[in-house]
Length: 188
Image (cartoon, rainbow, N blue to C red):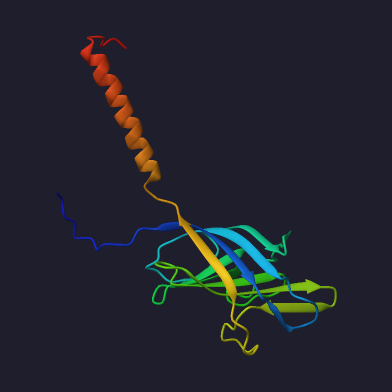
């Protein structure tokens, strides 16, 4: 076994995250909030590093308000704190933490070990009015908000899957070659 003088590093992880939030309420503007916000995204990152306004390694697959697609105004981004394992996902314009325009922000605690839904906020622009709805305070100046009723589901995608597939193919090939060698047929 070879030993290396290089420090050990955590492997990059890839997860598909789905979320569902209910009991949203208006904290500014006019209108009635959606009764349910759902969505999903995939994220690839190293959980030992901190990220701020990172737009690579994340893809928003879906975002819906009451079953209707909701498009955000800016690229999706994420912030991650490796010390407390908090992940914030949202549009880049106001930073992942603060929704601006047609935007959202989703907070997930303990992302690297046992993901927990913290809060979801979204804002949308309607003619001459900005509405902002939230399920819980992010410690902002908007006030104290109700707790969230929501859920998070993460599915890790194993980084070793391509390696496993190539090893399986090599085993199949070597078995075929061994059978062929035993019968004496070594012609190509």
